[in-house]
Structure formats: C-alpha cells, structure tokens
Length: 262
Image (cartoon, one colour):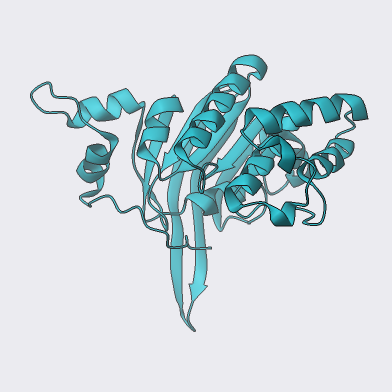
C-alpha cells in the first residue's frame, strides 16, 4: 500500500465574476512508505494547495487522494490521525512560550508530561532555538524561530505522514541544514513518510528520494534527482536542478516571494 496515492487531482479557485484559476491539473503521484518525496516548484505553482488537500483542509474538485488507503474526503478524521503538517503560517498561542505550546500539543496526543518536556527541550535545542528563548512568549520570537517551534511541534509525536510545506522558509543556512538532518533522522528512526514542498533546489536535491516538478498546477517531470539531472545533462557534464527545471518547463527559475494561489 502506498503511503500517499493521488490520482487525477484537480483544484480550481474563483477569479473575478466568471473566471477561475486552475491551481492543480490532473495530478498523479504515489509515495511509498518511508520515502521522502519532494514537490519542487516556484511560488504560485500549486504546491501549498496540494498539501492542504492531503491534510484535509481543502476539498478537491476532482480526483482521488488516499493516505495509507484512507480517502481524504470520506475518511478525513482518520487521515488527520495519520498526518502532521508544518507550514509557513503555523498558528500558536502567542502569549505562551515555545515549551508551553509544545506541552499543550503533547497533551492532545496523550504524551506523559515528563517525557514531553524532555523531548520538547531536546527538539528545540537541536533545531537551534536559543536556550533563553524556550521559556519566553512566542510573540517575542523572530519568524525563523517560530518556524523552528512549528517543526518541533510536528516532530514531538512523529506521524506516519509528515507534510512539510516550505519548512525552511525564513531560516538561515545553518538552521536549514539542521532541519534537513532532523528530517532524515526521523525517516531513519521512525520510518516516517515525508511529503516536502520547496522552492529550494539544493534542499530537494539533498534529502529527497524522488521529486516532482510542478509548473502551473501540472507535474512537468518526476523521478529521482539523479535521474532528472541525467536526463538533461550534456556531454557527460553534471546538470543542476535549475537546469532540469528549465529543460522540462522551458522557463527560467524564479524564486520570488509572491504568494501561491490559495
């Protein structure tokens, strides 16, 4: 059984009085248990829309999405028990500290207090959150520090499927590497399946077993990073993921700060 199976997925959003935007067009992909699967594309390509549908936060207009065999529409409650989502707009109790936010989440999953507190501190420090910030209110943390807390919260009780939607946005290079190492460790230790969306070519190349390049809501190419680079390399010269993107879409890579549709 696939950890994630998507067939013929379509999603549209209204635009103006009569128009509409096709965020996703006929998406087909399958993610094996324990795989780190990357969805690579610039902002506006539909990556976050895809993650929100898998997380049961949006309804698809057509197609089928299953998480470990469970339909995300008809069995949404069961799917929510199997997935955690980390996004750039994570919500917190801003007056509480990072530790208090994590302990609150731990109670929802029935994790004993002592175990949760120890694990929470370990994760926050491992992700590079300064020790003196662990007990301070979230509202005083930078965006990058808040993102680290969101990642720690998702990993406190490892899910079967971890949805990482641009998890390293706003992080410095060292913090990005710490998050990537933790994701690899989680897969190795817990067998967690990871769906990672990113516009960071190096990140996808480094930690993903396979990637799909998403362009204007369509999958332009799928394969391992090595396969995709070999497909476009010339005269034995090593290709980059940027060159892969150009080859399969005919577009230059744009890494801007615009907001994705929906």
